[in-house]
Image: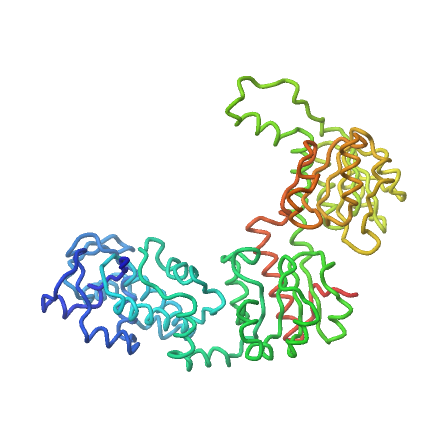
Length: 517
């Protein structure tokens, strides 16, 4: 049996006086009385008392230290002296809780209680761990944490959020967790289901889905249901869901899913590109589509310049030589291309394209651009950009060609055999838009035959490429896994904007970033 993590001395004051049997770690075992208290969930007094532990840490067996003033106090199993110290020295009383909202108070109490008893290892039986688990589950449900965030490892991660130093102990599987939720806490679950916050469907936490850190942003405004949980019970969740959050094209907003969401009001897409969404069909169902422009521009432009620099200066090749155990000398033949003073051609001068131009100016590059509409003179002069009405002119003169267009029927295979043949044989193609903007078969031929010198790609089609695709074996190709927006700051901004867009649609406010067909 694995170790349990129970600061049992915090609860069992009477049990210590009775000199109950001790386990190997020195912690007192649970009595039937305490088991009953835990099982019944009558934790109000204990939760209220445990608030004091937010301000103290145990320093010795019979002493504690105040986190505020570092004062040492004797500790003999009672928190009375600690309460008195907080009242007398720091004017902190339980009245603070009464002034807080019930939701905030609930979260603080839950957090402090879990933190109080998940602090020290002790041996316990599966039955004792089961009781402890059920108690934690009750608090997590009260804290309104969505079931969809919990999988076989998710529950441990939840506990770890309260105390990163916890030890592993007996925990139920996901199916056991679900059974406890449905059978023992159905009333609480029903309360959550009927609350005023709207419901939203999202892909998953981890994997190809969302970072755990950003799910809380969505959870502030929505009850969340993962796609996996939705598929288990579409009749329960389908009528409730008003928002569909699409991330990395998942969940796929196909007709089958859309017809199972009769209350759906908004499809909130993470990112600018909406080529994976049938906007006219979605709109015909009375559903609004939104995206997240603007917030992705800085990170994506950084990635474009990073790819350009890494390809031009052969940074990846240099790294491989430097770490190769067979390397005995550093070859001088690894020559790159001068970036400063070269000509940068940008195809697609929207928000991202303009940010790329700003970075190019920092390298004293001559900047050419092609766009459906010419930017104003002020914008051009700010970055020193020259407009090319004909894209062929840009291709012929540029040392680096960067693609920053949206994927549309008009831009599919925008760069093919003919366009590649117009480029300099010393030129590099950089693509941070969509893989289908480039004819990849034509690109392979151009790279193999020396029509162009190199390619740096953050996007391909499909993603990832089949492991035997010829692009993966070419030495003059640099590929990254569609990571243009992959910074913590940008991801948080994207999710925040997705939530703002969805809330605006549901509440009938003006929609900041609605996508029109």
